[in-house]
Image (cartoon, rainbow, N blue to C red; front, side, top):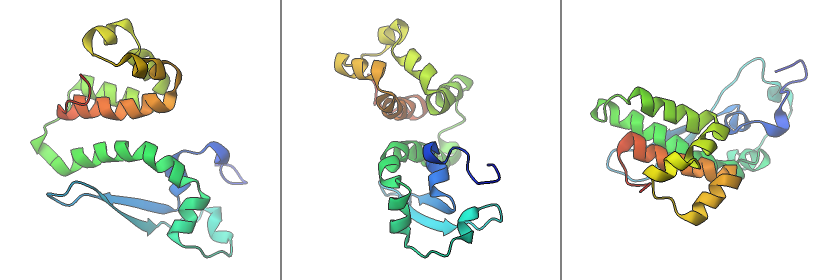
Length: 160
């Protein structure tokens, strides 16, 4: 943040695009999907409140480009939601699982090197077409990261 507002506005992440809306994602017991609700967060430093503008949540989401970003972050949000909703029944993730989670979540370059390495290929059966995408397309790396983390954290057979 600087005196004029956000210094990386054009390239801001999804959480910033939602602000000042708070996205509340909930999954009810014995249901498959999650339900999205919104809350308005009012803070003095948000310059958006100085605008004299009224719009619906759908209009705001479209204006912020969230229709493009949401599919990319939805699976990550579901990972966190699944862990939170399962509580202690899943157990505490190992240190290695947490390291993988943080690498896949926040260091896409390093995760890309990891999943395209020879050692990874020796342990996992990755389709050659997908492997080529993983070498060149970071969006594919992010999508694969969510699948891989479901495998690591919950034992789901998302990666052979």
